[in-house]
Amino acid sequence: MSAQGFPRTCAVIVAGGAGQRFGNPEGKQLIVIAGKPLLAWTLEAFDRARHVDHIVVVCPPDRELHVCDEVLSEYAFETPITFAPSGAERQDSTRNGMNAVPEGFEIIAVHDGARPLILSETIDAALEALVAADGGEQSDASAGQGLSSHVLDGMVCGQPAVDTLKIVDEQGVFLETPQRSRYWAVQTPQIFWVDALQRAYAWVEKTGFVGTDDSSLVEGAGGRVRGFEAPRDNLKVTLPEDVPPVEAVLRARMG
Image 1: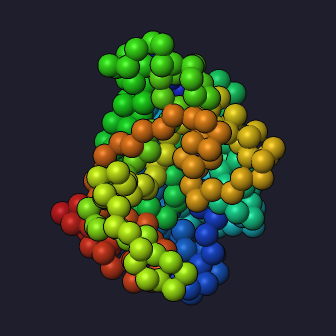
Image 2 (image 1 turned 180 degrees about the vertical axis):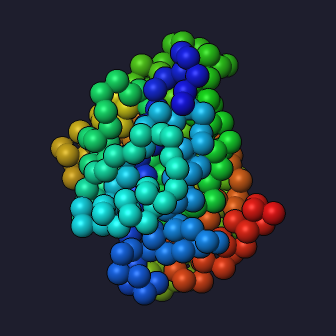
């Protein structure tokens, strides 16, 4: 739970992915990795984070019972956990999760349910970095130029790009090699002030914009978002071949 005086924070865990490629009709979020359902690892990290006061799990309504039976009833969580229905697209799911956040919360941390390697320490550090930006080197004059009254509207976990990047044409022929120092590879959690994310989704409703992540919506609406350098092993389970490296990291952490 958040320390006294820290803005109340709700985690929105997007767990709507299908599990056909994993042979699990209940969804890939419930495949067992290192002895636990994938989603259990993710929820445990947010449950242990000092600054997270509530968790909303976004999933298909017909999967809620499976999550309750296979995760919530099997493992002890101290943080309150509620549900929201997933949508047709990722940003629809996030919007549903945002709308299910209880009243009185100031920060939303959006995370992929299929990233079970996130550390509680990383979650707390990224939240603290967003809050600390208001008292950082930037002047108060820079506040309020985005979607909120804060210096930054969001903080996104990721890392500066280390691979060489290429711009290609329709046939895949290289056209340009941009400076990789200008690029980041982003992950989740993606953390936003509630009012900034709400205004971004209001802008989406007006424009019909479809982004590849929640940060792109906030940026498109005029928000100010910064990267937070997080561990590179924050892998996402998308395909079956992603499971062995994720399981290896989890078992190594277990000692």
